[in-house]
Length: 163
Image (cartoon, rainbow, N blue to C red):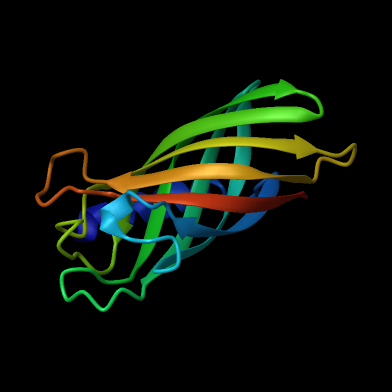
């Protein structure tokens, strides 16, 4: 466990001089962990560092709350870091990435704190200064490495600021 935390901290430190910061707010999708849209909320933020043309390294942190009252479901803090790919069709941009993640509170839908994975697909618009707004789909699960593995799915409004 200590090695996995150290690995995530190392990935975050690689993004210490980030090109961009972002934050988002989202809701759980209707088929995610059998919840309705009103029961699960997601807040996240992070930083991105451009590595090469169209490739970036991202560090992200966040929290989802689960208001269902089901004892098999809980909210959790999470942290993730990993690479992503960008297609720039100015002013439109499309991003996708998969990150190694860790959660604070396993439940009946996500077993184990680590390893977890965070996959995302983003479509948004960027202004001439590089600031953006868009919609993102996030998925968090253990990719079948730890059970249970129902996963969590979120639809997020994301706002980003170029530094």
